[in-house]
Image (tube, rainbow, N blue to C red; front, side, top):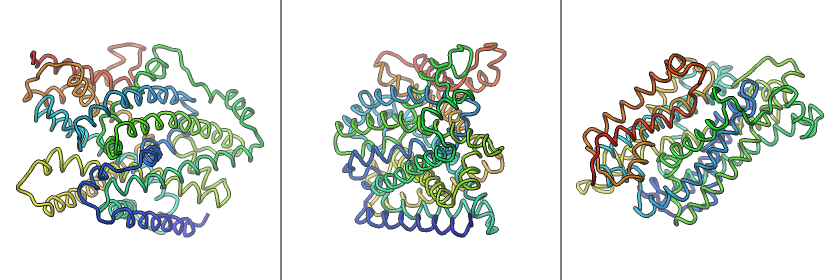
Length: 480
């Protein structure tokens, strides 16, 4: 399909986002930027969080991984469900009781200022690396399918997209993102369903027949029973639960939207709704992955992994499907990128700079600090995306889970220690403990074959990291 036509639809979609942003950001303040004035509709937040949780990586990488790992990712999704329930009934009541704007303020109240700054710093590191990885995947596809034909370099493509994100989040923050995420999630799920229906029709298969065909090819296995494998169902489910607890319940970006809801009860409804919908949506993505490989086999398409969905959608489907794919892909991109930059701005302003606690700053000065920080993180995103391009990463979903294991582990240990135990810590030593745990995990991961033989450590590295942090905190603690 003509890149000019695809580009026109992309620009039209941007204009729609700007219109929504202009409407929702009227009379915005720092409170509306950080927590939406605690007046967000829980149903909108729940639906929009689907797009934030999935991102372009899920849209492209989860279907692409089916040939190699079958439907194994659904095991992690079952773990997500368990994790979301724990968030709803353990973490959210805590956050609402303390009336937090930044969830890391809890660490200051419970453990001390060094613990607080350490937790916020690990979130900033994790969300910067993870958010840019998600952004890189989609920008790279847009570059190769549209903008490369116009002679636009990759760095300029990334810069333009980040400027567009900046323009519609700069003023409204969370208040705007709640609405734009809803629009983007709708477009993404519509793209998923329409592409699946088209391929089923093209292959002349019903749902049961397609599942049988996937089973014959070995694509539809959900549960894996080899205890040594990194895909072993017990490891995957437990790891999935902890991934959800950390990457949602201990993540300022995700919780920023939840605590923007007026009441705890509505926020809990939001998380439980998200938990149920995620099971269905991930299963649909895996089903689409199986369909893509069946289609590829029938039409001699050689692309695999992250490339199979874009290649089939843009080169082997009708033009209207190509347009739907591009719009859905962009819709998968923005909920992760816009929310990440907004949450990073919030965390840095509140947790690192402490602008809410400072009485020497006027409201206007605080607003300027927030805006400069927002611009700075946009620039950081540009640099890190270009580094990913330089490294030419092959599969982003594995990279994102690895980044989460190293950077969310200390947060898991800090929050778990604070919630479960009543002991006080030597606050000055907390940063050393939180840095040491990921370093130990790095060497365990690097030399796991020498340490464990055939036993493979996968996503449960996050749990090990959190446990090491917990033990370290215990060693530097005493009775309160």
